[in-house]
Length: 182
Image (cartoon, rainbow, N blue to C red; front, side):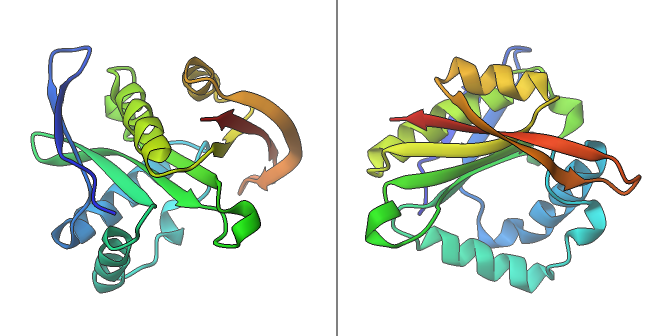
């Protein structure tokens, strides 16, 4: 679905535009995913795993814009995509349609200025408005900044997955499963 565009002021006084990604953002979104994936091990993929073509990404964006309840919110500063968040139904079956997954990531140069906070606020509001009752996410157990943000918005740890991610160097990362009831 398409979310309403919002202009927000960040902690450092910069202005960010929050809006749904559009088809013409496909190339910038792919570049953002490659950059962000290479800056931290706190996300699921490595940069080389961002393999969609611009056309495939454009199709994905357009399909998402027509979804009735799921959405993406991208944060732009001076026209540059610096953060993205999304809400996606875990499954369309009647028994689990009330549950949703949250994903969020920010380019490292823009950490600490409030983008994550603003994206979380708008995601939670829109998820509730869309009729979801429960938001779930996974987070690397050592990602203290993200865990703090999620707890600020009422998420609670409900479990741990040991060795959930295996890094290229052979080490493992555990994940917390977190949940918030809307």
